[in-house]
Length: 440
Image (tube, rainbow, N blue to C red; front, side):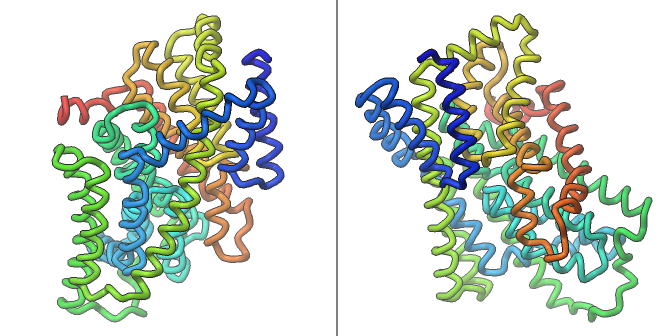
């Protein structure tokens, strides 16, 4: 069977199995091994132990459960809520201030969780109800939850970035630094949109200073809010700083984050056995699902690479006789389409080892291409009608919110993310300036 026909068969099988609701990791691994056995024979099963060793015993990937655990500890202990309250306190009582703080804090909560789905659901459970109770426009409230929670994969420490670095043998620290400026640019655009839209249409957000149903906070209450919220933010900066400065590896910094989250919960009297147990169970569930997906997608990707798909893609891109940037755009469109049916883990694991070597051969920096991939995935999983993150948002939205309203709420925010992606493609220094400045 030729690689072209094999690729078509594999994609068709993926669509069928996903339509039937099969577990993603088992479906991808099973498809690869089933078709591999028919086309290659029993030798294909040697892919399983080699993939198992490279996946579950990877020192870099060991950071994933640690970052997820750190995020769950901060969230379950209520320190995530404290970050939200501290941000609101610093911004002040102005029109749209709650939406602005939602974007800022939910971005950090999403970064702590490190996964789009968990980031959106965590952000929504914390921030959506207060926005609706204060009279915010439902579309604006839903949109900022999606925008803020989804940004977690662009703000370090990001699980997909770690996976990209592991799959392409690149520096995690450079990936984190490369994403910082695009992340800050995205947040600035999102906040600017909220401010401008609320000024143009005051009905979208109440004027916070006119609210009288909340009693003024005392100085001691304000101190506690700022202490708890800023301490959590400081912990995230310590985790990132330890990686960027070379003091700790990504895995070691994840351990620092876990210990720091436990200490914060103890010091601020938020630690209790029930919280500790809930954080552990939730982490175990998320890690189990993630690792099965990583394993199944890695088996699928390794089999496809072993059959020669990388050479096929290289020959096709060369045969098209297009400028290199057009090849990069084609890769972006492919990942955008994949985002309609699969999550960020699988896109990274399937596309990173396939597209990155070709991008490097075309003369592009792998860190630049990796950040473009993360930005593209961020857009893909939120794009109607089938972006899977939309259904996470539906899960935390009120019962009377339909999918049509969710589609309309996320559209302007997706457009802003697309602007950032295009700017990073046109001006690579947006991505490369900081890692080159800090790490050379």
